[in-house]
Length: 201
Figure 1 (cartoon, rainbow, N blue to C red):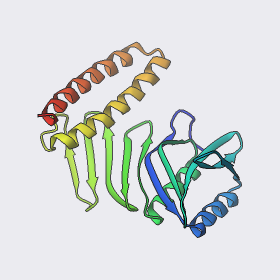
Figure 2: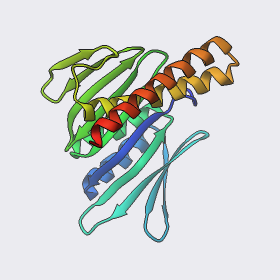
Figure 3: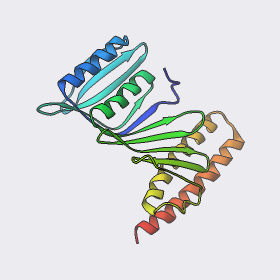
């Protein structure tokens, strides 16, 4: 089970689940001693997954032959559940982005049709990106090796990461870290503004 301050974040999640795949997922989670319940509202069906004090709700949209697990953003505070969801992304050819944070780098994996489209590691001023063909691109802060749109997307991800670091520093009342993260955030936002101007031309 993960620390409550380091959830695994799923973005733009979309997985079509047949009845067989859904039953297998439920059976697998029950085998890990999770309790599962269904909850309904007007448009969405929720699968509630409970273990101890942790409760997660997985949103589904009903279709004729399958259910679609769909969420703009979903935070998961449990390793077993997050691994199960990532396995579903692969086995059921889903789409989505998985962000895993740790005491070190931020890892971001993008899935398209169940395949890994890209894997990104962000750590300080250096980033490493692996595309779906397995080739890797490593670059420094100047970003000269990347096009404007790619760099813009990367800057957004890094801004999210620095905001998280800044929040932790504020909670810890760590003045030096707060100052460092604020300076880095300002630099990143300014650079993003410059990239936006290029994209809007």
